[in-house]
Amino acid sequence: MPKRILIQLDPDSQPSIFDAVVAVDAGADVLLRHGGVTVDTVVPLVHGAMFTRGGADLASTAIFIGGSDVPAAERLFDAVRGTFFGPVRVGVLLDPSGANTTAAAAVVAAARHLSFDASAVDGCRAVVLGGTGPVGQRVARLLARKGVAVTIASRSQERAEAVVERIRGGLPSAQLRCVASGSEPLPAELRSAIEAADLIVAAGAAGVRLLSASERSAATRARVLIDLNAVPPAGIEGIAPTDKGRPDAAAVVYGPLGVGGTKMKIHRAAVHRLFEDASVCLDAEELLALGEQLDAAG
Image 1: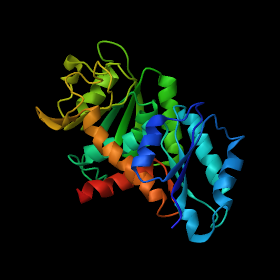
Image 2: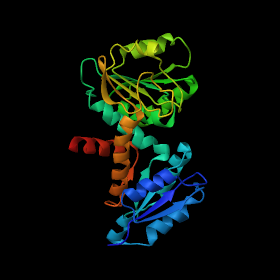
Image 3: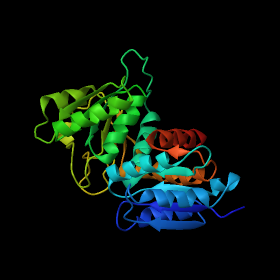
């Protein structure tokens, strides 16, 4: 059996060491790392992956697209997929800044305690704080696909409206709205959304508090609160990094490390999956499905 070769394509000048270590731990025998990759330079690299092996051996070559520039990584993902033709293709995973695996893990955690059944009388309502960032956008998108009514909170109304438009472009039925955040006390519209939310996810920038303890007191209906910020202070005051389904009044809470264990399982399983099927293209939705399978299996 040929060695498993993972080609790491990164728009950053120096490819991520974190992603490289995970790839090796997930079973890649050989790691080929390329930094500074753009849509103008990626095609020859993809051709190198496509044309050096044939038949079933192609499944032992795969591509991982990471980096800190999420829009640039998404453009690379589209360019890579556009290079394939017929059966001549390799598996591809998109996870810049860990945004896709983190978002998938957050939704998996929430689903342990909430029903996302869109046919329920009152439905499920979520607020995503920092909803225009890389992770927040994907959390909102994944929840919307589950039929959840999602409020995207951002300091920039313009950016929030752009995210709503982007998600609706691929999911016209999405129940989405955006509200302004970033001022104290909470703006009335955001406070109202928090009061009505079953789920609150803080996905803002590192080290930025998005919900203080007093503001959080408005979340009387919330059953799950998730903070994805690992840098002090906490994005949601009172949630510790290691919290993992910890009961807190009427809710359960998750911190970044509590979600991070699931994120790492999804990441490693995704890399392994690349070498099972040369046709797979793993974006946020596919990673969520993989995370749900892992969670169901225990």
